[in-house]
View 1 (tube, one colour):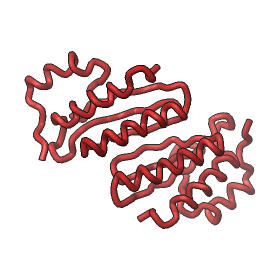
View 2: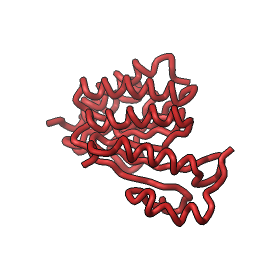
View 3: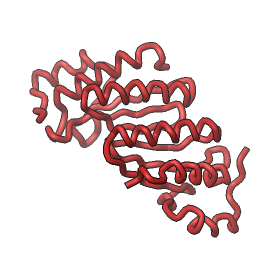
Length: 100
Length: 100
C-alpha cells in the first residue's frame, strides 16, 4: 500500500522532476515526449514497459506515431506517492538523449 | 495518399469489424481490449506495433495496466480509409484468444 506524498516531498518535485507537470484536476504528474518516428517512440515505450514491471508500478500512457504522453499516479494511494517519483526519475533516465 | 471510405465500404463495416465502434465526433473506429495483466497487454501491444510498422499505418492508442484502447483513422485522408480497415482486421487476428 502506497502513501500519498507529504507536502515536503511535493515541494521538492519541481527541482527533482522539472520536465513533469501537474495534471489538471487530478493528483498526478505528466510528461510529453516526442521522437523522430514511431520506431524510436516504440523503443522508448519498450524500455519504460520493462521499468514499469521492475517497479511493479505502471503508467497511464498514450502514443500517436512519434508522440508519447505519460501520466503517473498511484491508485492505491489515491494520488501521488513515492512510487510515482521513483518511476518518473527512471523514465527521465531512459528518455535521456533520444528525446527531441 | 489514402482516400476516404465510400458509403458502400462503410455499410459493410458492422459485419466486417463487429468489435469496433464509431468514435464520437470523429471519422474513426475504436476498440477496447482487456487482458489478464500488464504483461499480457504489453505482449499484445508489441504485436500490434509490428503490424503497424508493416502496414506503415499507426494507431492512436492508450494503455492503463491490463487495458488497451485503440483508435484508427487516416490523417492523410481526413477520416477512415481502407488502411484503417486492413489494420483493424490484422489487430482482430492478433487479439484472437488472448482477449478477455
